[in-house]
Image (cartoon, rainbow, N blue to C red; front, side, top):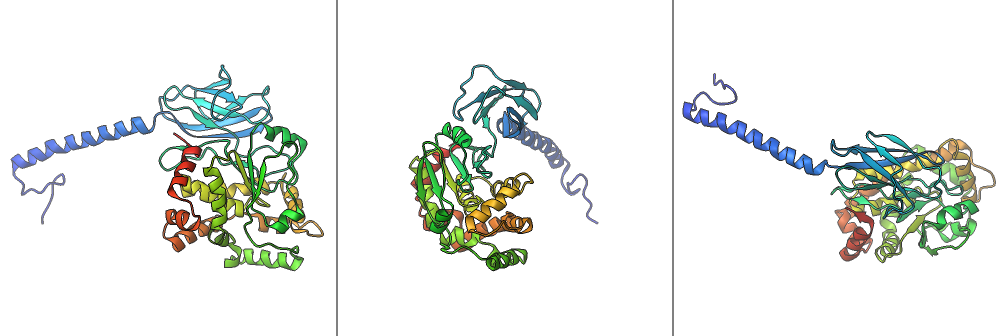
Length: 380
């Protein structure tokens, strides 16, 4: 039997065995030192901050922090790219922590300044608008190379039919320059956008079929049945991502040109808008897991108990139903499912070989424009 002692064959000479025992600890020590050096660079500061509203003027902030990051000073600002206050509103020694800024109104961006490491910015994901329950900021997502998508530049939303005067006051300070409406002509005619006050530029970039007549009750039943049966017809995002790639490219071209901040929206802000968000975030280098999580947030904002009735009313308005659809139908139609977006992204890879090929050959986005988009939308 050929036995080994300590992983070394007994046939090796004593002198060589001694050299091996000396070399092994040195190699191990070198590996540990390299790992520690890497960790000291990669794990300095705070990462992946989040901000959740608790009530008016109150927020809960959370983040991952390296041992040397604390304490973290929190500055409240009306701007995502600079701090407009002198004094920190809170110093956090351990997250999560609640921060209170009752004297501030409108959009607030929290600048988190750690004892060591880069300052990180965070804000609420969904804007608290009365007339658009799925109006969200695409900022704050971390890319695979450690950068972050800038806040306050690209928004995704459901239709802007019901914006109120209070919403107008809130939106005015965001400086939105462009709204890209991807609904069909018939959808826009049935439910035209309404922007109180000074409106930004509105651009129509239709995606999907142009239904001149409203869907019937039987049409709705067939769609619900297809979704419940998980048939291929229920995965509508396949067609959006591939068949309308050039339309999404038009929006990306406007972003490349610097027409920011921008809002992209459809009717519910779920399917066509979900595909747009996935294309943009993936182009920026956001990992697929985070892209899918962003897609699924529509469930939280459209199907919550305090929102589902307004979601039903939006469906009735958008499709011209004679009465409100029942809540079971609303949940079936409006639920965002991970396999839908996963299938769309897989279809892109299957059809074009890679996402980079898709951007170049289908979306018609040159590398130079993609570089400008990344320069505009990513921070270190």
